[in-house]
Length: 169
Image 1 (cartoon, one colour):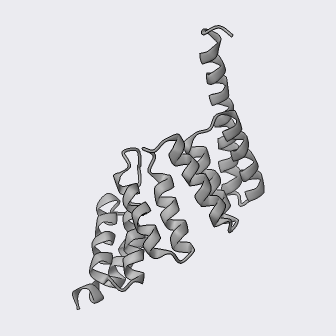
Image 2: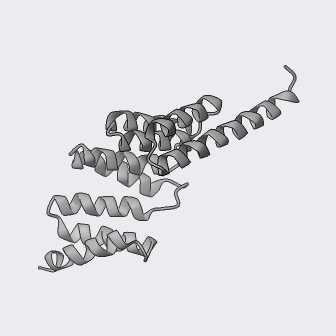
Image 3: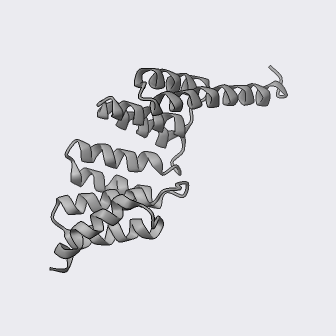
């Protein structure tokens, strides 16, 4: 194989991977999880990306397969450690498993990730952890930080309203 054909081959694989990813996402949004999982796997087979691993994990989480979801997020981090979504997702899945203390470092890593568009989510999830632990001042602080990232993020606003009296008291 000559060097001229390699970029085209990678480009074709990337194109195919994106098509499969888009189909997976569409099926997931339509609650067809098995089809979504199948297309995400095909996307990864064509060209593994952090996004495809993360979204496959997300589909697994919807199916109640939290350990598989965490494993996919770890694979996403191996592909691209700068991508913030899988760190937040691992934290979220650990929270769902009842491991609040174990969730904290993952959520903090999400906040440090250079490639992440929604820092409001790890702040919000940290707020949920602190609220659950009865640390209302810390929870309120995280909810405020989530709102500073996205002032329209209603769950953070509602949570702040809920914990604010306890944080001040």
